[in-house]
Image (tube, rainbow, N blue to C red; front, side):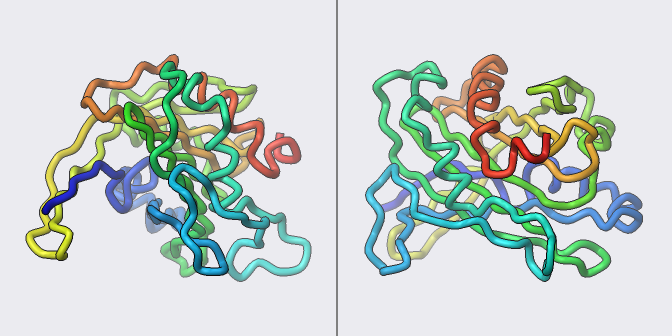
Length: 240
């Protein structure tokens, strides 16, 4: 018996694409954005969460940050912000229930060895899959417009600098016994990067959307989701 699913490849999103700019990686200490997917997430007690629900979590300091360093959202908190009761309605598929929901508290190392917090969350429906991630570094969003290809478009979203661009998932197929795993091109995705503050002083949030049927997601759907979800992320108002 085999199973198959679409996922953002490790290193996908703006961070993965920016990594191809080797000079910028060395000069700016650009980290690699990695999505740590949690499917069938378990709580701290070890009991399985119901499909479509998020586990509890509190804000944590980014790795190696001490003293008065700003607190960041956890993967569980991003999951709760994303997995809102009206998410299916925002996606234009009212009545659909999420199949899975989970969060991850990942981090990456910059070229200079500094740990960069990259919490993330994912909610999957029958029609759409949505991810939300945060990156707590000093890299401005404006930099990405020149790195993400000709279709990347600078915009202002929620009074903050943003970039809208195209991405693609990978399709992963595997047998339940762990043998014969394979991967290949997946479905088109649309992604939106939004600066953590109006001055674009560093760090960003990213919302990515793709469809199970392989159709290109409508930008209006992505923007509608982002404009409702992002203001509910812990710390958003303080960073405005």
